[in-house]
Every structure is written in structure tokens, then in C-alpha cells.
Length: 298
Image (cartoon, rainbow, N blue to C red; front, side, top):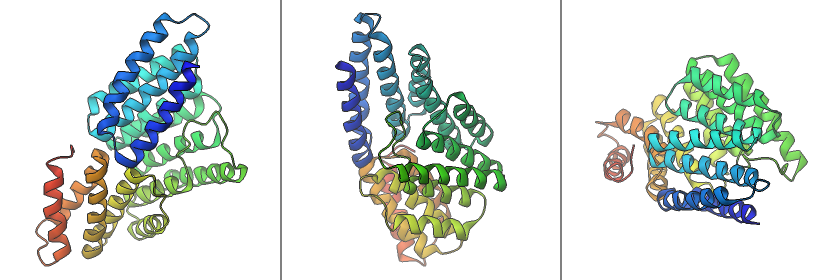
């Protein structure tokens, strides 16, 4: 019963995190994880594996909140802890999910080799549900894109599309799925990111703009990140007015959700637009960025 309570509580916190960001959520995760740990220490042997698995999910979520706060040390600590707990619980699907998240952290550090290797290990650890396997393929695609390997990156994206399409056709997600957020919108956002990293600026901008036109309203943090990528694509193509406008929208969302992950591409955009005084939109973006950067960690 307690395990179900904590799983449901985690779902509610995840919704809040997606909408409003990690600032308040992270402290709750730290406190509640300590409570779960105490109950798990005192639990009977038949209950402990279930509580270990629940604690692993909370630790992974703590890492995600720390990632979005820009606290790389805490994010790494929580994921290492989640992996250890998953192994102790004999929960191979959770262990694979944590490896996928470690691949995501490597991609955020622009370490393509590590991202691709960890994502491949995650996919091969245990048979996964379609959405969870698609997440592994997305991380492989990111890693290959960072390596400049267009063929392998786009092949991984195409394979992920087949899995996400199949999951959508089935309807209700497999109950074993952890990464339920791996929807078509999420996949296409990362497809656009990979195209951008590969230098395919036109297709990247088209993909990102198309998916943002119908973006789900309850995933505001990911919308901020996706709009920042679109702004970078426009800036790379020399479309500075559009880049500034998209950057301003992304910045507004980022200020609301306090997402350090979205601030990083916006920082790149700020550098590209520096000195662009001919565009009122660019001046407004740069001024607003300086203000938000003083409150959101990069």
C-alpha cells in the first residue's frame, strides 16, 4: 500500500514539475526519499524489494529535478544512487532507464561517445516496452549526432519513430513503461535537435516549428527547450528576427519553469545575437536574457 502511495505521489510531482519547474519539487523529493529509505530499512524481507524499486524511481526523479536546477553534482549522485537501488531490487527495466538517463546527461555535456555507449547498453540490458526502448534510441541518436554521424543518428531516430507509432496504435501504454513522456512530440523535438547538431539547419527548423505548432500544454519545460533549439536553428540560418522572437518565447517559459537545461541553448543564442542592435527584437531578447540569467542557473 505504501509503495502505491509513493508511486502515485511521484506521478503528481512529475506533472507539477513539467508545468512549473523543479525549484519547489527538489526539496520535496529529498525529504520524501529519506522517508522511503527509513520505511525500507524497517520493512520485512518480502516488502523490501518493492520499496527498493520505488526508492530507485524517486532517486531518478531527484536527478531529473537537479538536472533542471543546473546542479550537475547532485544530478549525478541521484542517478548513481538510482542505479544501485535498481540493481538491489533486481529491477532491470529501471536499471536500463537509469542508464538511458545517464546517456542523456552525457549528451547534455556534449559527450557523444559516452551518450551513444550508455544508450546502447541500456537498450540491450533487458527487453523494454516500446516507449522505453524508443528513449534509448533517441539518446543513441543524440550521441551519434554529436559525433557527426548522420547515417547512424537518423537510423536511430527512424527506429524510434516506428516504436512510438506502434505504442500509439496500441492505445493504453504497457503498465511496465516508465518513460510515458516519450510521445511523438517529444521524439520529433529531439529529431529536430539531432538535425541541428548535424548541420541540417533547414530540416531542423521545419521539424521544430511543425511540432511546436501543436505542442502539448502540460509540457512547458520541454517546450522551452524545443523553442530554444528552434531559435538556434533560425540564428544559424541567419534569420535573426525569427530567432529573437522564438528566443523570447523560450525565455519567458524558462523564467517560469526555472529550467537550467533550457538556459544553456538560450545562452548560445544570446552570444550569437550579441551586438545585433539593428533588430529591436534582438535587443529585447538580449536585455531579458541578462535579467533571467541572474536568477536561473546555467
